[in-house]
Length: 380
Image (tube, rainbow, N blue to C red; front, side, top):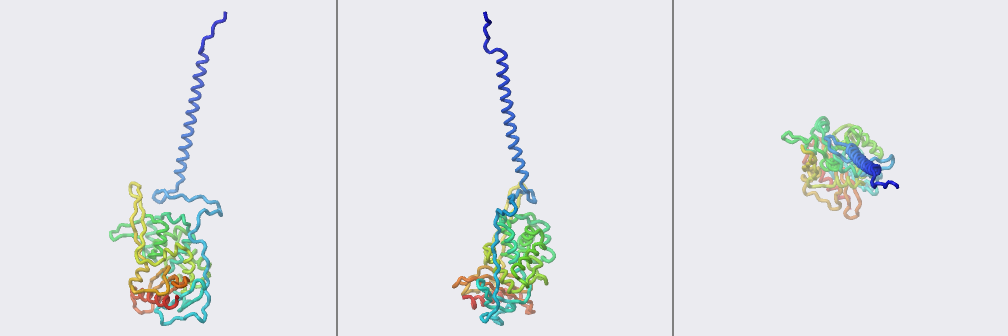
């Protein structure tokens, strides 16, 4: 008689427990491995983020294969505007205006409508910054506009000493109480407006350093652009327009620079005439790492001229854009649109130190009066 088999023998019971244990071990190992991989990836991504000068995370620039730009330059489609020679219809100016240098051109035809000493070399003062804006916008992308740059101690020292001393400074670099804003950040877009609206040396230098690494390298780019535009009587040795024998142009060349610049919509907006301040934001981070901002107001250079001649009125043109300059002389380069034909005209006016003893307010008034006279006389 066979011995009956007992259910759930010890051998079978041990095999079931082993299988369950093995299964739980494999599941645990899989979960641990998954968590480890995810944690590693998160840490790696965090370490890859570039840090600002003060440890503030800044947007990462995408990796772009050579020759395959994923971003569009702010200004990349400008064309050279050649000027025609003078003809029988060109008006040679004399005592009609106070300015010593002048030229009025029709941009579409390249015709010189009126001129006075338009090929004599002079120092363009802050009209230089029109070329500064051209080179900047041709070397920045639309994505760059919201990037922020810090106002550092070395930049502060550079623009408040030497050749830059006592020039227009837009940012509140030092208040009367001695509190500085070194360490604050400004967007590239706001710095570009600082260059054009209030002629700020600090804004210009921050942009030049970001693009070229130094003012000297940026000046080389400006001179290369002048040669590309065919300007034989123009050269630069600084980015803001302080007087120098090596920073020169002519009214004719300056008109071509402005005509080229007016093909960039952003530059047109930066240089449009304003009678009120243009406000931007300064950014900083408090002790808790929380971003804070405060307003900075750029006072338009154009406004300072207009207030000295409040009766200024144009009958045949609307001013589209302008850039003023002042050292020991008084300068302005202006783009205007004809009210009747829609044609674009560029006017450059410049004075020279002639011993007249005129103060700045008087020079500004005369410049505005000359601009009024020429536009009202020659623009339909």
